[in-house]
Length: 126
Length: 126
DNA sequence: TTTACATATTCCTATATAGGCATGTATTGT
DNA sequence: ACAATACATGCCTATATAGGAATATGTAAA
Image 1 (tube, each protein chain N blue to C red):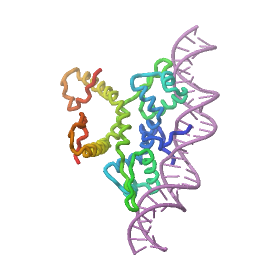
Image 2: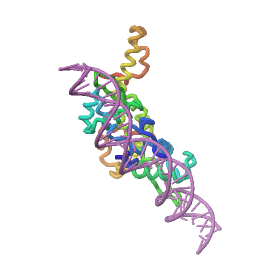
Image 3: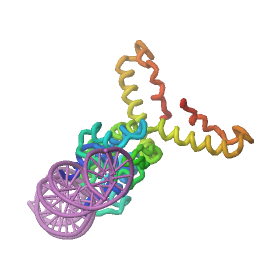
Image 4: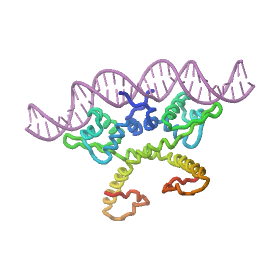
């Protein structure tokens, strides 16, 4: 079988750098397609197609305003991605913790807690 | 041009559902390929190829142990994705806030703050 | 209505898979 | 050394783009 369709889910849709760019640009507020074209530096049909993909997976909302179409990022649709990646947080925190512990061990316990400049979020249960 | 390579970055690598499955499976601890094959329910060559992609973008680490290869998720490589999606958090919180405000308005202001059950993170400046 | 403007859609091509199957390779057991 | 085990790779095919060019569609202005 071939690769999964980009329209199948947000993960695939977001895999394209241009679409991430568009989502970032549209997160602040509504913009019409022409503004996106100018901002992204891609030809209009390509932008329209990317917007089509983003629309199909629900990552953007559209509103018609005269002969313009106002696009806006639907941040709620990005939330599942944030939550999935977040399930790995305790693992990378654990890694950082080990790195930190090694660094402290290398100091032979001297100048203790000097390097702990406000990054207490590294604490975790073993 | 065609679609970007899955080996180009973590975003593309993670777009594949099977690879997300593998990453989740390997997050808890080291596993050898045979275990992944059994857990994912995909033939061995396919799993090896997915592992190859994950390796190239740094999403997994490998260690040789006799004739086995122990794979493990490199959670740190997932962190950038979490942070990118996190940049949209204030926007979806804002949306949730508006939904909440509408719900409260519908109640005509009665039974005020009853629905605010510990989700104070919804507060945001307008 | 005719014209201009803003977008979407269609057609076409080069590229990159994902999965199935067969084979190569490294390491251990006998 | 030889066989078995555990993976990795190579080959092949159907599929799905991403981007470019040209065209269709829809709406507002003259």
